[in-house]
Length: 151
Ligand code: ZN
Image (cartoon, rainbow, N blue to C red):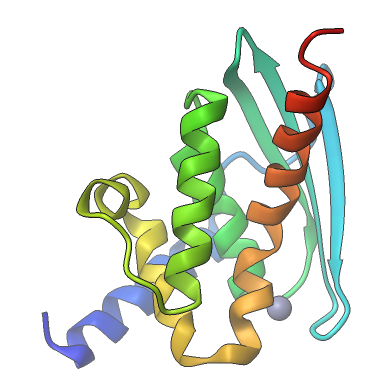
């Protein structure tokens, strides 16, 4: 795909998710809630997750900030909903690799889908934290879950 075409697709995906965010709100019966801030841009993202049987049964985000932070959070919910905790963590790692300009496997790239497009922000280092915010929040929640799995 040509770079101009890729940039256009990227803008369309980002704008679509920023204007029509998926899974926005807060879960009443969340098993975990994590709020993270990105002070360099002013983004605030709060992720709530419901984990059931080591699976992400429900996932929502709330908060405010720039277009990329909001669109990336919305994309995250669509990609990671109904994934196993283990697979979700792998995909979060793959996304983190993508936005810092590293290669990921074709399988991970496929499964990230539109979220992989956000990997283009690697061209704009200042926006990496914006794109990563929601994914890092969920990663911390899954971390906590792992630490308390045998309660
Ligand atoms: Zn931002």
